[in-house]
Length: 393
Image (cartoon, rainbow, N blue to C red):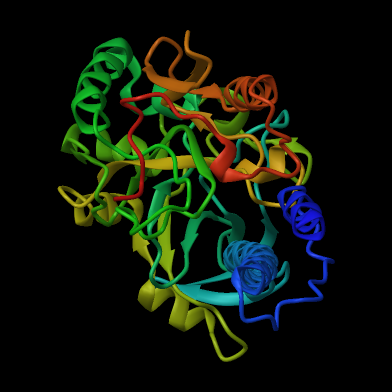
């Protein structure tokens, strides 16, 4: 029995490297020996299953991380491609109107003298005009000024990633009233919106990645409706949203080849076209509409929407890269540390269009206080306060 007592003590310490010499006996001693060996074998099987489960969990986490990184890279590549297409579109249009190019517009022959992209007088924000053309008539040297806003086929945004100056330009004298009006709508719209995804169960919002934590919501103006819509942009503001006639002078009176030209940032025409090597000036004039015509077309067609700015905690990017760099949030989602030492949140309407960096840094500080390594986040280790809207059923 001493051998068996020693074996049981070894098993209780987690040591399965034991032997029983008399398990073949037909008496009670043999039964006890065989029972000890069964217990040992079960322990060995349990340890193997635990090891395999942990290996599977690690593999699943790695696969999940790779999937997230792939999704993120696809998203970023799509953004880069769209930006590249827009730039290439502008360059192709400028080549068509290269200086010394002759063309006929409304029955009059002109020669292009200046073709350039307007630039703001100081960094920050762009003029609305994409291509500025100054041409002289061949007959009497009369100037033709074309200030073209160029949009690719399938364009969506009139104002993307809005900042405080965009809002001020559009609503001008009614700035404070419209801030309050849209904040009141946001209070109702965002009350139940999921703000964190801990990767558990089915998703409410399929586009929200595992590990996402919402820092707040940007405001945008688009020609498509979205789930987080604040309604149609009232018609009296459409002209300003499209043309920017109230925009700050440094963008309104933009630089053309380093020279300030009054109103060069406000377009006279809008061209919706994907330009290629076969595009001619005639094609452009057939498609191009005046700014007034375009404004009229877009009445009752522009929506004010919100877009969540999420901190992707499982991303391997830098801190700011996890939330797409600097974004200006109409509503902030302020994360906080609750009294019972868990992660809580509340909507913050006090500073519309503040940058997301303060909210991001605060969130990371709270996670670190909770013992979470922000460079190696384990979602199961995040203690979440009651009442925080989750993206998982």
